[in-house]
Length: 249
Image: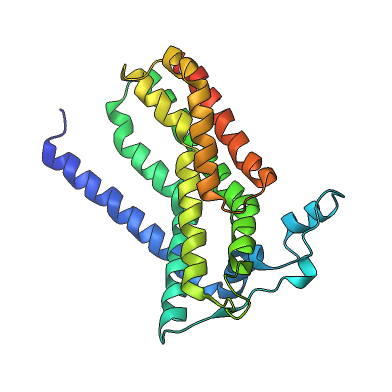
C-alpha cells in the first residue's frame, strides 16, 4: 500500500530533525575546538602560510612577506563570541554535510528508478567534490592574495589598516561560498541540458564570450591586479566550462 501524503510529510519531518540534530552536535564540537578552528581560519593572513612559502621559491615572484603583518581588532562587545558561534556553525555544517546529504538522498530515493538512483548518487558525490574544490581554491589562492592586497592597500600613509575580526571572517566565508557555487557550473549545465534548456553547441559557439566573462568574474573576485593570480582563478573556471560542455553531450 502506497504511503499517503501525511506519511511522506512525517518522514520528511523526521529527516529534517535528524539533520538539525547532527548539525547542532557538529557545531557544538567545533565550538569546543576553538584554537585549532581559528588557527585554520587565520592561517591565510599569516606570512608563513603555505601558499606564500611555495611561491617564494619561484625566482620571478618577490612577495616580501617579512614586511607584511596583519593586525586585527574587535570593536563590539559581543563580536568575538558571536563570530566564534558563526564559524562553529559553518564548520559544523561542513562536517555534518555527508550525513545531511545521505539523509536527504534516503528520503527521495524510494521515488527514483534504479538508473535515477545511480545518477543521483553520482551527481551528489561529484557536486560535493566540486564545491570542496572551489572552497579549497579560495582558501589556498584567492583569499590569501586578496587579503594581502586589500590589507596592505593605503590611500594615504597616515591611514593605518586595522582589520575588524568580523570583516575578515565574513569575507573568507562569503568568498568560499561564491567559489563553491561557481564550481557547481558543470552540475547546473547538466541539469539544464537534461531539461532541454541548454545545448552543448550553444556553449561551444560562445566559448570566447564565456572566457571574457570568466576573466571579468575572476578579476572581481581577486582585486590584486596581477596577471598571475587572475590566471590561477580563470583557468579552473574555464576548465569547468569545458567540462560543462562534455557533461551535456
